[in-house]
Image (cartoon, rainbow, N blue to C red; front, top):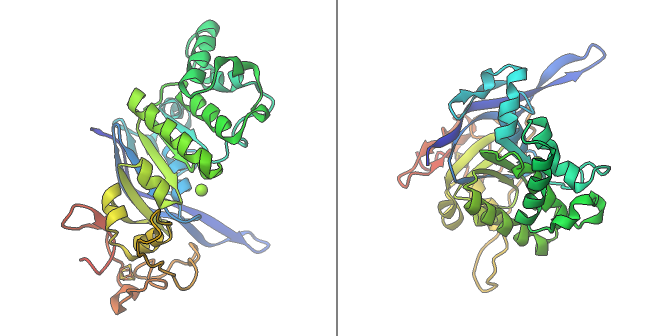
Length: 321
Ligand code: SF4
Ligand code: MG
């Protein structure tokens, strides 16, 4: 496919204020120089532990969080240069699905009103057309249209996420940012919702940025995957490259934590020493060096650039360049 969205050197540094003068005491480098492209019709997964900057990255694409630096180009438009009032079009074309479908649905609104709302905001259709579209969307996500007059609390977690998906689809977005869409759901429900997303992707040629902390969920759903650690992408390749043969020691550790279906398959869990350092004071050199089982001297001083390996994937690690 064609590039739909390109992100170049994206950064979000939150100021830390302290003392009675509320002076800037430094910055939390939540996202620190992230670049990637999402192609039409694909799913790019973004995976990493909580606090690695993946959600902040997703929100910056819609400028729900303002980037500190870098460029976002979406369908040829530079999102990062748009004035606030010009953001409406972007917020129609890029929709979000959130982790907690209960918190993201207004409890006082009927399902019909919830799904209709983005159509009202973006002035799509008259009342009759909108009601018809809500019914259609409910069927599309596997809920009967007789649910339209009910309230969010009358649904299970999985059904609520289906409502959130219907709402995201209502304005026919070009890109959907799904931020941990199944991590709040029971394991048994997770695969149903993932299968629904796959079906919808096929049916409506959707493009996804799929954010998750669990590499097995990302593998199931993504064509390509970027692994984030401390605000940076440390490896980016096809889903199979990363899942079958991870190269970056951090990806290897993440993958070793994924349970294997076959109990006889020998797989050693890699236990990382130490904690994730504070993003206010990231390590010099390689951001992963204080926890890396393969650490070398130069890792402590020289930052490895994200570079292409012979199979085309990108990795930021001195072992390979
Ligand atoms: Fe480990 Fe060095 Fe590679 Fe960083 S650059 S991941 S510390 S081997
Ligand atoms: Mg998050």
